[in-house]
Image 1 (cartoon, helix red, strand yellow):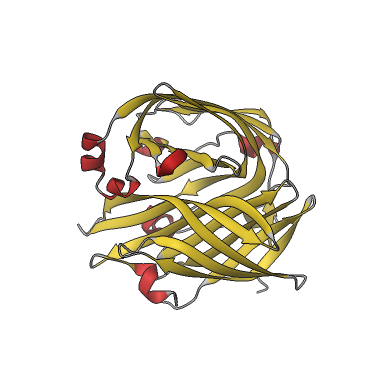
Image 2 (cartoon, one colour; image 1 turned 135 degrees about the horizontal axis):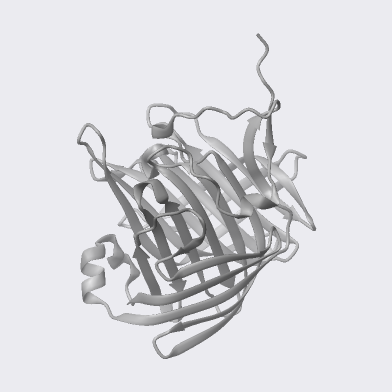
Length: 347
């Protein structure tokens, strides 16, 4: 029997919440980042509705001058998947694929030493908690990248919920402007960045490790590099991404990320190489400006305690003589106290 052909679909309605799948770990997530190169400040914002578990994952992270970071995370209760609005963070779609609005009213923990968040209980206890408000407008400057893979006949692709990270995912580079207020300080920002959305079953422990590097150099030159190891028992690594060249995306079919680490196993910089399907090659160097380590913990059905570390770093990138900003987001499972990717991905 011939294999069914798989296609990717994306509709304007996908910008809005979907009917949740009947699985306990259904997750509908929207994420935005933005960075102001001149000021070297920025931030990222994520809301993940886990409605079948009765809560949302809400994160706000602001990269402020002098290496300070304002951070807040919460699991506010939700009972429906009708909107992206929980824990003080509200994401409103004004014009699908073109314009969205992000508001946050709440608190942030102001960290002079962001690495303290490796122990969140202590970090929140020992650092000031300040009032915070964020108001930002997102304007897309690229096509949409990604969507939902389905069979050509329209039928769904069946996934194993315990090993899924999402069943659909898309990304877009864009402009983001507005302001942050932290305590009495107000920061006006006019930045460039990337947003994404995903939905479907998710456990943070479903991927062995990944390196995700979204970056923007100008309104018509940007990239996203992705290197993923899905299974700790396999040496297979999936490398992919895209390059925004003018007003179109060129697909990356091969890339490498070689990282420099500090004594805590956090990235301080990286040398990257990427090649598009058309054969164009890029050399990219990255320098971490400010980094915060985060974690997710879960107890498996067999009682095993699982822990995932995600380091979120505002990073300065250089490519083809241009300087840009973006993220280096590194996810690793913690096994025997060590991040899985640091020792196994050739870095």
